Length: 303
View 1 (tube, rainbow, N blue to C red):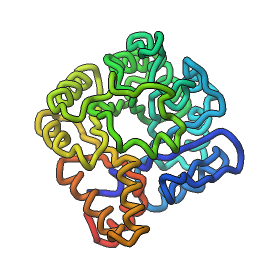
View 2 (cartoon, rainbow, N blue to C red):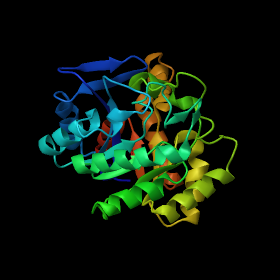
View 3 (cartoon, rainbow, N blue to C red):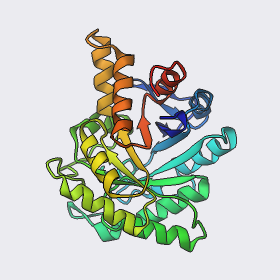
View 4 (cartoon, rainbow, N blue to C red):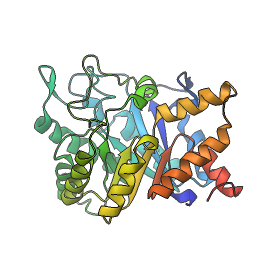
């Protein structure tokens, strides 16, 4: 366990002088680009190694065009971040749900996501983020074949060394609720069970991880973390790539709520959750409590 393995997920939105608390995630904020360096410097000073950026655009449309626009919210945020706080490692989330008017992760045909049509857009998103300064891209959409499409597009444009962290093992989970509130990305109709995985299913997670590695994924992520550490261990034992896990918004919100009610020791719970993930085989840990975990490592409480 090391602070450099921590990733902090953060939300960036259009506008100026914005730092607004997310009601369902106490202590987490949406930042405008001009206020973003405040939290980036906090992370760098704490020793957190990486930041993953999620964008909240002013304009949404059916094709999620702001996700791959050269002047999109994430593209501008990456340019600013690399200039203002260059020591951090920046990861771009590659998906469309925050940018589409319908809230789904791809291009629709009727009420169904068109997997193959979406691949072209995902590749465009990844390329635009890397051109803006992303050190790594992390596709979270769960479309089949997207790792191959992204790798091909990055290589074709000369970004042959840019790594891809795949959300290969991403379950259709109730733990995502606060994130969807934070990012305004809840589906306008239906759900995402046709492209995210059934949480009853263990074998599909292994299949997806192996397929993504074959297509060129450099890192495999399991999401959520806490209730899926069996998948971390199983995939870790079967593969030879770094493993990541995302301690998602619902995990964070439950800990915060329990602590506010006086039911649990917040710091002790955060430490125990982090240790359990690393014990299961995680090499990279994404958490909204990344700064606190780094502090607890400095204090010798974990690590």
